Image (cartoon, rainbow, N blue to C red; front, top):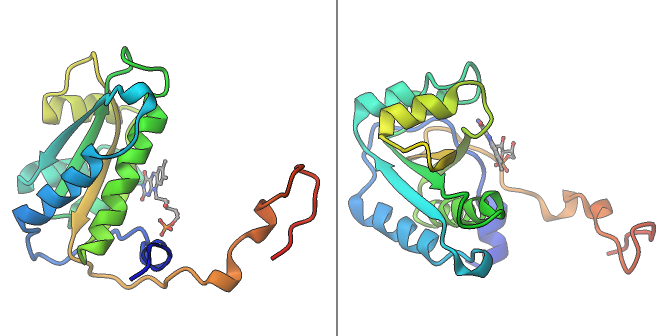
Length: 175
Ligand SMILES: Cc1cc2nc3c(=O)[nH]c(=O)nc-3n(C[C@H](O)[C@H](O)[C@H](O)COP(=O)(O)O)c2cc1C
């Protein structure tokens, strides 16, 4: 599979079967996350792996809408960031999250980003559920599991090519 095929295939998956995610797949995704680039190599991330079913179900209640993927997720990875290391912590955490999302797809798993930072009281709830100190910002929790829904791949012919500009923003796009 090419990297472009992997990108086309990766979609947010929010419903999972009850088949557990193997530990070696979790380890693989974490290795990918630990190789993600970060500003000045500050590596400001902390990853908390959640496998406990009760905690996963409690995560589904951290948001009114937007966290329902934890009704069926069989694993989750909290991405907490140290903002005292760099002002680019949101970008750094997002890149690590995307490494996890793409690695999950490559491993035959489904995954979805659940936003935590600046979402109602979600951050406090994740802090107390997962023991994360106030010194870290909780960016998101990635839900994981074997897919129990089908999503269509991205169609290369239907991408928003109009978002691409050449030399100046006002230029016309072309393919
Ligand atoms: C920063 C960010 C925050 C997101 N937050 C949520 C969320 O809280 N809940 C959710 O169900 N999906 C969330 N998503 C997933 C997006 O809804 C999804 O990526 C988008 O609709 C495109 O669909 P795709 O991932 O299938 O390509 C988030 C994605 C990103 C990048």
